[in-house]
Image (cartoon, rainbow, N blue to C red; front, side, top):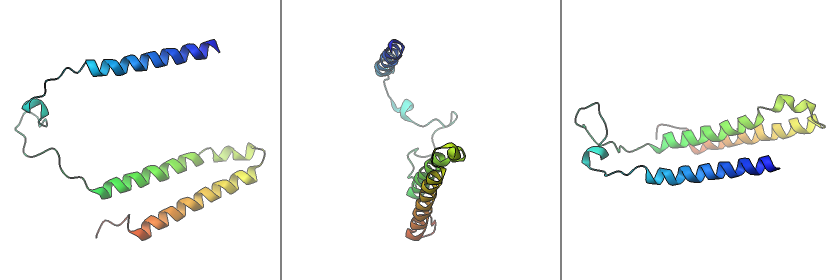
Length: 116
């Protein structure tokens, strides 16, 4: 137990010290040159703050959601070593059915259509 408390104390101390240090280090004086986007020594051609399509954001969020759910199913091949492997596979089937229903719902709502 002493080792655990020592590791937690060191981790907390280090993270707090780095957080405080990150506020003190960047003593920046932003001017026009520092705030302009870097374009290999040339003058900037346009603004760096271009509008971002929400379609890309939606697809990225959907990918992360479904990827996370699939990552939760990765240990499934070792499920036959549990006390009730049938129940494990039943829960995995329920999760896959919910994922499929979620994908069908997004498809029917038009979340995956690029053309409007």
